[in-house]
Length: 141
Image (cartoon, rainbow, N blue to C red):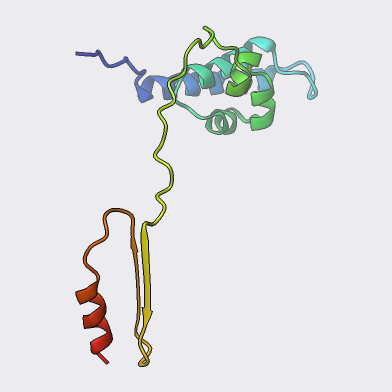
């Protein structure tokens, strides 16, 4: 039996977010000047909250009063884009199972009656007896 990974409980994540929001509020109320930069430790904690939890960057940014794009700019390079992450081990073999080629029809039957009825059949396997089918279709005028 494969053990399920332990996920942090949503309440703990939200509690951590709330506590961080209080720290941001405290910093904003006590900053030295209105244009003072947010301390790096607060940015680091906000980024780690996004990367280590199931909270979205937009939710964290909104709750902390930050711009989502500014928060994402502070991600470490490895977390910024999954496509740019280096592979941990080189791939030495890739199994490519060939797909069957598109089936080409062995027989195609296209019949039209004077009353406008249309019958189109395409067979990819063995051909069934068509004589009775065609006779029945053409006689139903």
